[in-house]
Length: 232
Ligand code: FE
Image 1 (tube, rainbow, N blue to C red):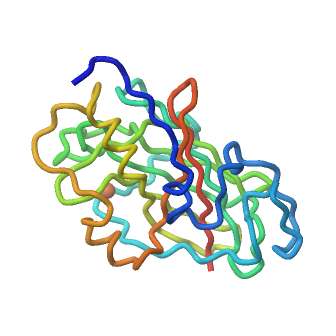
Image 2: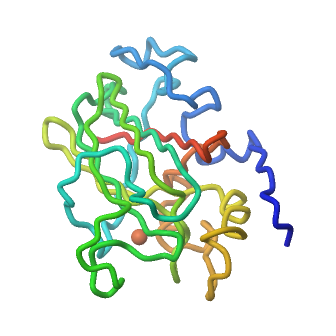
């Protein structure tokens, strides 16, 4: 294996598969006018005339509220920096959900979650945090590309609560080709066991092609990701 970091070139077709309404122009997320989707333009993150509802997925065993409103989740942990932007929208109006609360949590490069005895992380709160959406419904987290653990494809957990109380718990996924490259190196490398690809993950598979897949790009700092989360 080459010690040099390989360049990951984004394949546009790959990105668009499963990326919903996002085009490459969505990174960085551009201003999103508070107008119905019929007024959508190419400069908006919400494209087209529909905002398909993001499917609900299991919360899993590792959620808790760390009571940390913060953008930076890494707390010095090792991994590839990821700037992840999520746009929370109300699906029927296809409109940004200002002030929506977004909780993010995910495992570290070794596949462990913070805050649990079983993960040997009692009292820790790394890779967890909360943000509130701006007028465009956008939140940005600075975290790390997640690791993986047995029985699942790589994912990030998200809980979004709109100002009116409507709530969605879901999980975000990533292009397999990107994971293949990242996991060969650094803090991710040398893991025992077998990582599942997206199509092998029973939760991902159960979503029948509707699984939320983040649109990813390389940046000088690491990675940028973007995704629309639409609540019914
Ligand atoms: Fe998980």
